Image 1 (cartoon, rainbow, N blue to C red):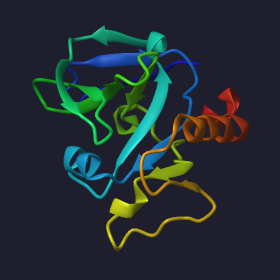
Image 2: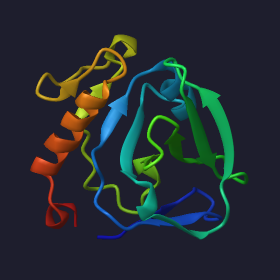
Image 3: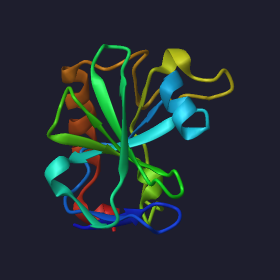
Image 4: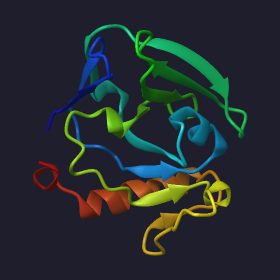
Length: 156
């Protein structure tokens, strides 16, 4: 399975060469600010499966509410946020799935930081919803549910 994507101006192109681990929406204030919207979407993938084909993303690091570091990768020309590298798990990178060339199959299975969701956002009770940051065990549940409901052929 190969998923291609890149920034808005085309200076950075990438491929993900493995199936995503999960897809979720995060409603924390940092994701709201970063996305310029009510929430940000994340698609964790194995760091080893992400290959930069063209360009070199710039980075910026910040501290999370839990005290961990996250390194944010973006295009220096157009500013598109491409992915985040959390220090809590260096084997994973959180791709911003709106930067994929084909987004028609995207469907979040969970919501993080729902306590910060905008009042007009309606959350689906059938999804995995977390009021704050999920524990490692809760992330494993996000991964397991995604794996059960998505196969490589369903993402084509």
